[in-house]
Image (cartoon, rainbow, N blue to C red):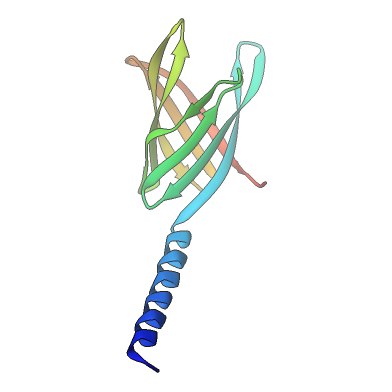
Length: 126
């Protein structure tokens, strides 16, 4: 085998190995929570992709708002992220933080110094 073919073969194996490793460390999941406000009940949906410690995706609330995850991080089963939500003609940042364990995400939210609600998201199978 010529030297050029040996280099090409080695580079090909390296690329496939890196691609396999990258796919192994990236996962996408869908989570749902049932939320109650007064006598109304609705579903929130969290679509989340994790690559290393970085989290991306979106969160929808029962009213139909869809928020993009910003500053998402998952470290030692602790999940944190922010969303930008519309409110009364302007926007506000909502900070989410919680724990991931055994097919359950327990999230709390906080905005403008006020604590919000606690939500329990269960992993769904698509």
